[in-house]
Length: 237
Ligand SMILES: Nc1ncnc2c1ncn2[C@@H]1O[C@H](COP(=O)(O)OP(=O)(O)O)[C@@H](O)[C@H]1O
Ligand SMILES: [Mg+2]
Image (cartoon, rainbow, N blue to C red; front, side):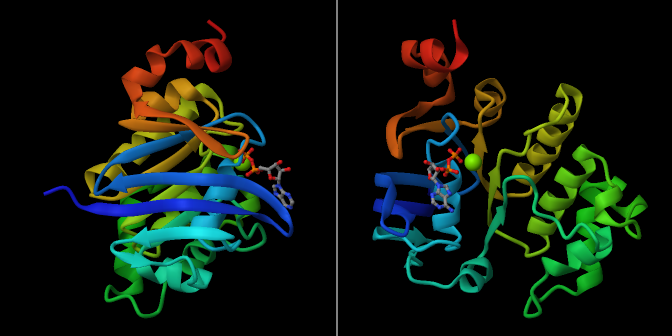
């Protein structure tokens, strides 16, 4: 049976008195990869911040594994099993790789710290090599891997990635996506935000298109790639 992981119902959200997201309805099932696409300023980051509760929704429901988490504080959202890998990584640059990874671990996890780190190093061997280096000395690709690794340290069931390919050369983008496919194989459900539509729709099974804070299209990746609207407005063909 298909199990719902996240359902968002009639959500609106924003900053202070400014509404950014309106009438958002969205769902993702277990082990699915779903992309949210949209140009700069469309509200993609605001959507992730609302789910992880860095900002509070104005109205609507956020149902995660059957519970409405719309009023949870951020640490309870994380404890429920949601990880948010923020735009630009947001690392602690003057801490080591190892210390950054530790920041992602919750004390009440059943697994011991060393086992969790071992799993992360298996996916990202470079982080093991660099574990005693300060985060600021890492390359762009390594920083992105560290922020994904830190997200994994909370042992999430569901991970949200805000533009993981941003600023990276194509070869590194391929490498990041290879890593993401390992996460999928391990049963983690993935919500991916991307401006690079080709990458996103190759990796995701389905996508939503966000424009001016509203979802204007949704569909299977193939459908979206073939749609005239996407071709004209996002792919320039
Ligand atoms: N901290 C903030 N305070 C006020 N407005 C914001 C803030 N962050 C983003 N916005 C506004 O919200 C809208 C959506 O931004 P954002 O979610 O960052 O878009 P995207 O991630 O799709 O580029 C933009 O109009 C932006 O100016
Ligand atoms: Mg953004």
